[in-house]
Length: 337
Image 1: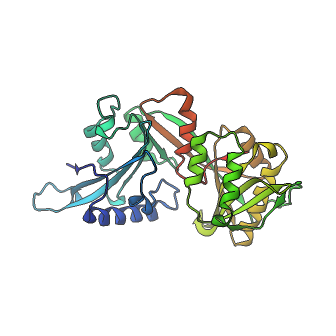
Image 2 (image 1 turned 180 degrees about the vertical axis):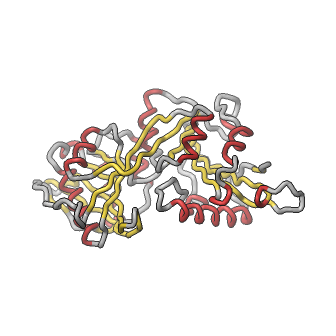
Image 3 (image 1 turned 45 degrees about the horizontal axis):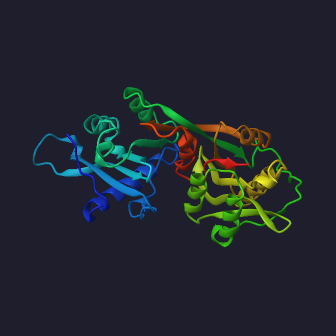
C-alpha cells in the first residue's frame, strides 16, 4: 500500500525526506549513469507559463502491513507542465525499495490517461515525457508492461584522453578564433548570440538559455562575431574506474556550419579536459544527427551508453521533435552543428 498527494510546493517535512532520497539515489546510481534528479529542482521556480507538481510517495517502513509502523518517503515524482500541456516527468525510487513494485503500483493507481478533464491525474498534462538514462532495467520493464513507446534516443559517447587507447589530439585547422576555457557566465551573451544565429527550434534555444552557468565554455568567433561554442565541465568523477569529465552542448551558427568549426571546438575542449586530469571524456549526442555522429567517430569517440525518451499521449506533429530536444534534461545533451 502506498500513499501520495500532489502539491505545488513540498511541505517542510516532505522536502527533507525527499531531498535525502534524491541525494541517496543519485550517489547510488552515479556509476551506472542512471537518471538522477538535481536537488535544486525541489525548490526551482517554474518558468513562465509552467506549473510544477511534486508527488512524494509514502509507504510503511519496509513495506510493513503493521499499523504501528511509521510511513516514510519511498519514491518521488516531479512533473513540470508547460502551456501546451506537455509534462516533463522525473521519477526516482529509494534504492532500498526498488524491485518491490512501487512504480508499478503507482502507475496502476494513477493510470496513464491524459485525455480526461484536467489532463493526467488532474495536473493539466496532456502528454507525458520521461527520459531514462543508462538503459535502466526497471524502466524497460515498466514501459514494456504498460506499452509506453520510446519516441527519441540519445547515446553517451566516450573518448579516451590518455593511456593505451587514446588517439592523438591534433589541433583542427580553422579560420575562426578560439578562446581559452572561461566560466560560462562570462560568455553567456556570446553563447546566446550563437544560438540565435541557428535554425534550431525556439524551444530548444530556450532550453539552452535556461541551463545553469556551471562549468566552462570555449567560444569561437569569425571576424569578431560569435560563431560557436562548446561547454565542458572539468570536474572529475569515476567512470568504469577511470577519471572522467563531461562535455556539454556544442553549437555552431548557421553561417559557420560546414567549416570544421565544430571539430576544432571539440578538440580544444578535449585537450582542456585532458590537461585537467581526465582520462576519458563523456558527451551525449542524438544518434539521428548524422553529422554529429560522423564527426565524433572521426575524433575517436565510441558509444558507451544508450538512453530513451518515453511518451504517453500525443501532441502536434509539428512540435514533436522540438519538444523531445527540450526535454533532454541536461545542456550536455545533443549538438547543433
